[in-house]
Length: 194
Image (cartoon, rainbow, N blue to C red):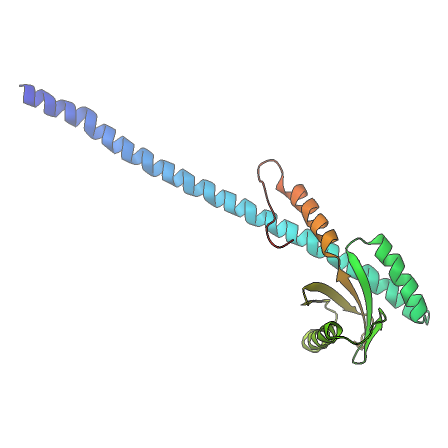
């Protein structure tokens, strides 16, 4: 009788407990997977939003430089006028480290530079980008650890305005974008050089 009572207790108490424990474990694993997926989707969305903010900010900076340089060229401005306009833009746009004016294929008009290895590398990279890009698209490139953007002033693609992206200002802009997008539910931290 005791053996029978023991088997009934095992059957009625322990077996359902084991089944319920197994089902609860599966439910918790599914819940964890769902939460991880949501967190990953939120993080990906935040990173895309930050990248979009940075991209549009840099494109706005490049558009301002292009418009100012195009207006100066339309007035028939010389190098001095281009330099004055470039300094105005640099003072108003923190991420614009320097303003460039490139005549394809001859070279840089602004800033006035002596030929050196770094400028030759930039000139070669820019010429390759111009040759391989569709008309009307801004050109983004790196050379010697620096980031540059260029945009054609004319449809003939013979005159380009460009910017050197100020990395400290870009870091500040990135930090601001991270803080704006992250919010209270998500903490984002930028890692990498700098």
